[in-house]
Image 1 (cartoon, rainbow, N blue to C red):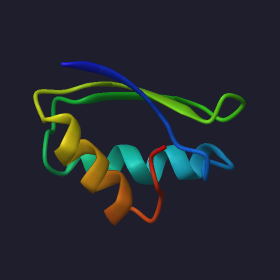
Image 2: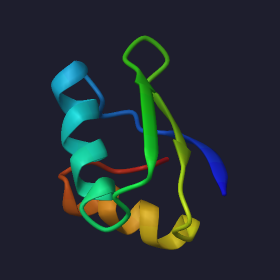
Image 3: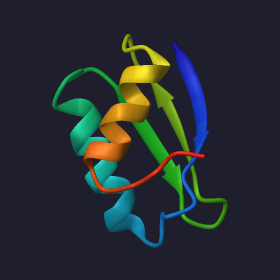
Length: 64
């Protein structure tokens, strides 16, 4: 599954890394690319969108 998710709380590259690590802790093959300027993530994973949003929240961020 390929998703683009807006995460307004992204402020720096470390935020993206934190979210990527949370997602990859459950799906080691997930590809997570973020853009600090647009505050969005492009994610390719076998996880459901609900699970990905849950993992974003667990990492301390909130998906829009």
